[in-house]
Image 1 (cartoon, rainbow, N blue to C red):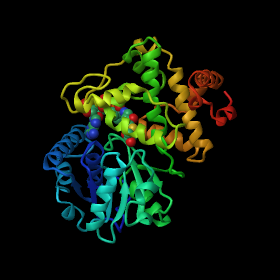
Image 2: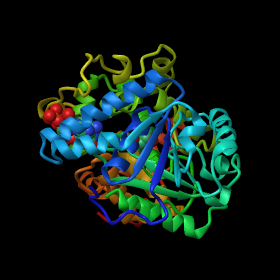
Image 3: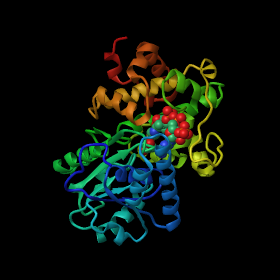
Length: 388
Ligand code: 3HC
């Protein structure tokens, strides 16, 4: 079954490194679109867990009549879980690396990969925040290296950010864009290799901002999250989304982004505390909220609770970071809106939500925050060009 454009002639076999939340989903979506896939991890038990999650997800898609049982079995059979790296890389046309966000770890992984990968293998990374130029330099082929950043859950989210590094060949950029389309996904080209690319430049700071609101505004988590869901049109509350994404992912992304650019995020200590105490969100049973052991679980949020909180601070920071992406030439305003819609499920255009709340009010909120907390909050000049 291929839901998108036809398979790319030069790519038949894909090797996904790392079988965590992103890796297993990327493997599944590739197999769903006709590719032969190897899913590789360092221990059998991680792969068993990943294959169980793929089975669960395929069963859900059957239950919802998106695919039939026969298709589901064929897709499952197209994914080979393999521990041995040499075997996993054999004959791979495209490598998609989805190991944890740690440059040292990636360096180790790529030095091993370089020993076994064939010359024809194109490298890509699903890194959420590490610069593609930096990672690609750790490999034997920076010219044939590209960022392909998927969103969680990859099975359902339509967006993939495509990020060229400083040395990426133009033909590989085109291949990356076409590969994403062949997965029935929507590629957005990130013109500059900036920390957080497009969506994480907006999402990660929001988690911290919501933590400041929780600390300062005398409201509960579900009141803030309900306001995010019903007044800012995100499908999940922001604490709920942080738990769903994983506090380890958020924490590591924060460190990497903040170490490269202080203007990206204003870190709140709560994130590091949760991470250090092993409260990683849904996957560990507790993060901001507590969870049972179901595969998929939602937090109960309501319009009633939403009425009790004005999420203007959260909105202002989101719009300011979106404005920076446009001013800095990372992408167009249309791209930001598409990325938020397809990568985070935003149900209304962000700048329209901004206008509904008043751009002047947003600028004055940012000015007050800047006075109190420093230049992270300085309103981006792009905001002055928007009329209500
Ligand atoms: N495969 C198949 N089905 C799945 C699934 C999966 N992986 N995950 C969830 N589902 C199913 C659910 O089980 C549910 O089925 P059910 O009703 O039978 O239980 C169905 O999908 C719909 O779920 P919901 O009722 O919760 O409906 P929603 O309309 O809210 O859709 C969602 C779910 C698509 C996850 C939506 O809530 C959403 O878009 N959330 C935001 C996700 C987001 O922002 N992701 C990006 C995070 S940032 C990131 O990933 C970048 C990284 O670098 C940090």
